[in-house]
Image 1 (tube, rainbow over the protein chains, first blue to last red):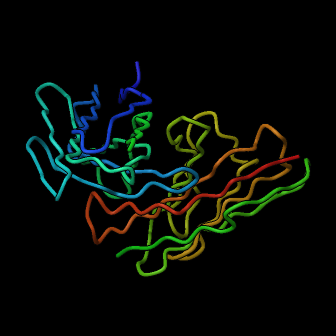
Image 2 (image 1 turned 180 degrees about the vertical axis):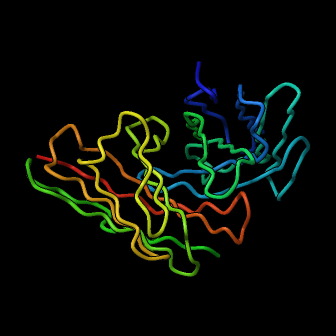
Length: 113
Length: 117
């Protein structure tokens, strides 16, 4: 079983839709959670980050963490064609400096006109 | 914001030759850098973690003699693929950690598409 599970998609939605992306994880030591967006043939860019359980909102994006269920989500409101990309969840623990990130497989999202 | 520059973005080389990929943190010092490999439609696979001034730590299954990593300064890490073969063709991505930004301070380069012919 992988430490982080993420549905690879592809997920296709119409412009303006609300998108829900999710990851589950098995390692209770994870406390820092991130969502990265990766366009084709580019490196990932940090989109959202949260610590422990709770919600965080930034513009059209909302990140949620439920540590009791080991489940994290990213919601995109009013989705745009420019949101079409692969979204990767990532997480790390508190074992000191230089922690490595554990990634999900990424969900490919396509927002259609 | 934190910027990581990775070069080259694309490289084609002949089988048996070596290729060097550079990763530079432009506006912060990175004591730790990470090298990943990514296959089409798959996630990032961590190859190794490099700390400035010390030997890299390789993940299980990654050949350290084939993938040479050097992190000689706080702003530069290099990955050299030695005696490259077609199966080494992949997308390689580096990441640098800005410790000043806490647990979220991971910035990625734009990746290098390596094709071995």
